[in-house]
Amino acid sequence: MLSAVGTRMTTFAIGIWLWQKTESATAVTLLAFVAFGSTILFSPIAGALVDRWSRRVTIVAADVGTAVATAILLAVYLFGHVDLWLIYVVNFATGAFLSFQVPAYTATITGMVRKEGWTRANAMIGMLRAAPAIFAPAIAAPLMATVGVEPILAIQVVACLIATAVMFAVALPPLPPRDETTDKPGFLRDTTMAFGYIAARPSLRGLLFITFSISFLSAVGWVLFAPMILARTGNDSNAVGIVQVVGAIGGTVAGIWLATLKPTPHMVRRMLIGVLVLAIPGRMLFGFDSVLIWSIALALGWGAIPFIDGYNQTIWQAKVPRALQGRVFAAQQAAENVALPIAYISAGLLADHLLEPAMRSDGVLAAIFGPITGTGPGTGIAVLYVLSGAAAVLLAVYGFLTPAIRDAEKLLPDQAVEGAAEPQPQDADR
Image (tube, rainbow, N blue to C red; front, side, top):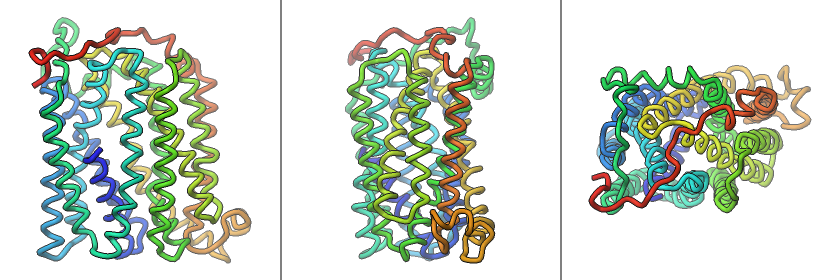
């Protein structure tokens, strides 16, 4: 939680700082592009190492690496001239370290929690992703307004170091044994085998297509979330913070709700309903011009995410053998993240060069979308939200109509462990 709060604060602050310096949607999207591009590049390596190294070592190394990268950027802010290229380099390094965390945490859950508790555990992780966004803008916005970026970077460094210390106090299960008759060793093979494993299973391919598409459509809007609100509110960073906090509350409440639900044999169905909620109120409502409506939209959209991610990840945990999970989850992460840099660059270019000009008072799209979104700065981005929501509706319909996706829980054999015992001190991962 502490590490996530620090990261959220830094992302919020750097995004605001960059927009205020450049007023360029492309510059803001490029910042995210390099981070996710780095995660994609390093994910195959991360997966191979997650299934080889102690999970504790993997997670600690990622936190320490993030702390060091942020400390370098902090030093430059304090003692030198901040160039844009350096911000991009630090984001690239942070993305590389983050590529280790998701597969390591997700694979660890399978060994620590009994099968019936996997969805609940995934929901709790979803809450940990959403809850920091409640606190981060509330802390970062006034700090940005009064003392600048530097204290926010310092908070992230300290938060990562505290998270590292906490990891040494937690007992983790040992790595599962590797079946070398079917899973032949070899580092190079380990970096690529998971892609073939997924490709050979139509249901996993279908689920990955759904999450890849959701990642793309969500990112198209999310990366321009702050620029849209800033453009439509006269650069009011507090409005950005208010909407983000309300949205994060929605995600947190939804995660709590998911954690209280009983296990269901209809996880795919609930996941696709979540896609519809994300699509209609969670994206299309951003077409209107109101901080209140944006807050409701983000709360509902973020509220759908725990159901989409939680149920999807539970299916993968149940169907993939534990000894392969680090590599398969890293491949899953890489494939989903491929959508993000593509979406970020596309969104920036579309906003700056097509939709924003087209939504001026005399623009070619003003007559079509103007009655809903209005015209002027930021309305082109609002149109992008509406279009991405419509595409997500079509995606959900496709999922319901495709047997390999709709019936994935029945078609895929349950290959994971049936449950997990509490790790004993003498057996725990060290």
